Length: 424
RNA sequence: GGAGAAAUGGCAGAGUGGUCGAAUGCGGCAGUCUUGAAAACUGUUGAGGGUCACACCUCCGGGGGUUCGAAUCCCUCUUUCUCCGCCA
Image (cartoon, rainbow, N blue to C red; front, side, top):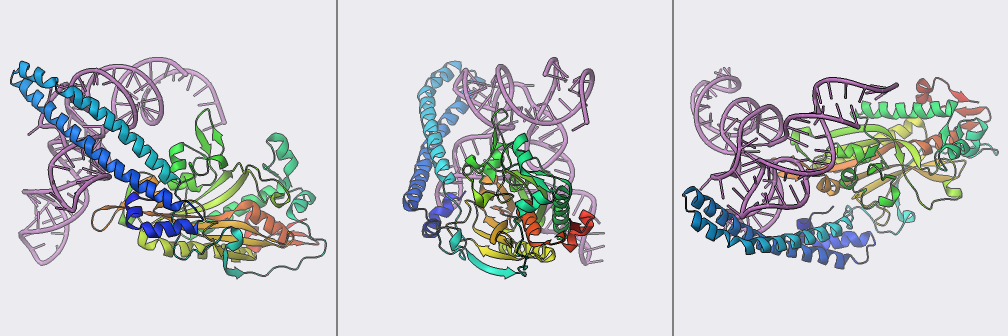
C-alpha cells in the first residue's frame, strides 16, 4: 500500500505509474485519496480539540474532588455531556473517513520502477536474457503428461478421485524426482546464504493483507470459513509475514530466507489445453526465497536473486529466458518483476517457472516492517521475493527436454538426490 | 476438550479509578574519566497522528462498555502459562 504523504509529494509520478499499469481512472482515484486525507486531518483536528477540552475538565474535576469541593465538581460535570456527544460524533466520522481511505488505498497497486515499459499483457513483456541450448528431440517426443503416464510418474485421474482436477498424485520415481528437486533447490539457496524456514501453510487475514494478497487476490485463495484461515498461494505470504510489525536494526540487513511449501490456488475459470498436465494446478510445490533489505540495497539484491536463479537453471542445463514484466502484467504489489521461463521442447512453448520481484515499501507499509535508520528514525524496509523454483513446470521441463529413446535422463546435479540416473 | 492464572515500553518488572505515556533494573545512545577499552558517574532513550516548530490528540494484547476521568472496574475475543484429558 502506498503512503499518503508519498502520493501527495509525488502525485505526478504516482499518476504516471498507474497509467503505466493501465489504470484508467487514476486521476479520480488519487484526488479522492488526497481529499479524504484532507478530511481526515480536519476531522481529527476538531476531534483533538474536543478531547483536549474534555481532558482539561476531567483534570479540574479531579482536583476539585481532592480539595473536597464536591459541589463545584458536580457543576463542572454537567459541562461534559455535550463534549462527549461531539467527541462521539467526530470520532465516528473519523472512523468512516479512515475506512474509506484505507479501502481506496487497498485498490491502488504499487508504482512501477523506472525501467518498467508500457504494455497490456504478457505479450508486451521484454525479453532481457536467454541462455541454454534447446534440445533436438526425436519425432516421437511426448508432452510431459504423456510421459508421466508412460512411466507411471504422475496420476492425474487418481487426484481427481480423491480431491478434484488440479491435484495430481506423484508416484514412484516421479515423487522421488520432485523431492530431489526440492532438496536441490533448498540446498542451493542455503549455500547462497538463505536461511531455511518451515512455515505454516495456513495464514490469517492479517498476513494476507500484509503481503498484498488480500483483498486483491481474495478470489484466488482457498478460504477456510470455519476458522477464517487462508491456504497459502505462495510461501511468500507466511515468510514475509514473519517480519510483520517489526522494527529492525540496520545491522539486521540483509535478511535472507528460503522455504519449501505447497501452494494452493483456486485458478477459477482456467480450463483447456493450455493448462493441461502440470501446467496449471490447484496445488503445487514451490521453493521460495524472500529478502528483507535496506532501501539502498534492494535493487542490487534483486539482481543478485536473478543471478542466483540463473545459476540453478544453468546447472540443470535447461533452456530459459528472462522477461522484464511490462506495466500491464506487473503484479499488484510489485515495482519490478523478472519472470523466468523455461522452454519446453515437446510442448513448443515457454513455461513460467519463477517470478522475482522487488516490492520496495509497498508490503512493508502494510506489514509495518521498519528499521531504525542512521538518523534514529523509523523507516520502511524493502521486501523482495522470488521462486527458486516452482516445481511442476520444472518437472515438466525436465521430463520433456531430457527424454530420449532409452527413457528420461536425470540431470547430473540431481542424481545424488534421486539415486537413479534414468527413468525407463 | 475441562479447571485455574496471566498479557504493561527492546527486555525484565512495578503500578487496582484522578498531572501515569507509565516507577525501577537491564539493554541502547551521548558525555565525563582513560593512550584505548572496561568499570564508575551524568544525561538521554517507545510508537503513530498533527504542527514551520510548539501546543495538542491517540496507543498499557484486540474489540466493546461503565465513568467527568480507565493501564487500573465490567463484558467479549485472542494469545500464553500451570494442572487434567486426548493424541502424530
